[in-house]
Length: 221
Ligand code: 0O2
Image (cartoon, rainbow, N blue to C red):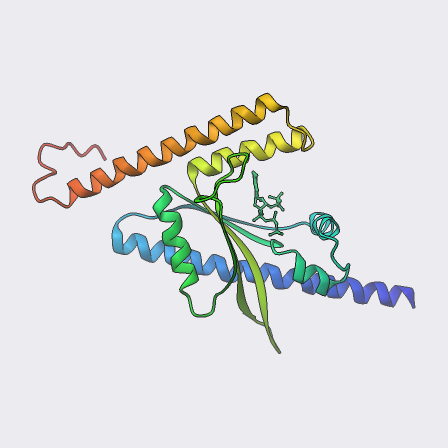
């Protein structure tokens, strides 16, 4: 009957979404391990924050429609890569690449796609390092390869992206030219801050490794 068909569809969709939720869980564990272990070894953490989100059914369908995908679970699975999304914010630009390398090097991670908008920012000024990976998720009777999109960026890039995203949707994707120019300016300012902060950080690290360099420095902690 129609009702049975609907129930089956609902069950399939719930399982579909669950696999992405498990994919997020797997990758969150990996990143949290890197975060803890790295800060234990080096006395500082390259990761400032990690967040995750499961794309809503509505946004998944809208994206599949935009891409002209076949409207089946398989069609959506192969075309929409960011159903499971994880965002990692770092203090410094070099840390974003460190995290990227550490994730890429893991044996059970398959890197499917990389977009380096840090080296090559988008025309609007957007910067971020994107990777789509596949990780195995072990279910009760089978193993599933699940796609997870990871966005890695600095705090300054994230600050910019959050505001740009808000403005983009406030103006329903038609942002006035003046604001676009100001956003591009702000992106350049954010980048200048990133470069300066990293230089300062490197300088302090170099200082800390010279014996006796701490003399006369007041510890205010
Ligand atoms: P939302 O609302 O964040 O989920 P592809 O499917 O790979 O061909 P896609 O998905 O556009 O194309 O890939 P891309 O360029 O890697 O962008 C993926 C995500 O990066 C976007 O997801 C945004 O989260 C973010 N992003 C990309 N460009 C911009 C930008 O100019 N500004 C901001 N603020 N974020 C950006 P969604 O699904 O488009 O949006």
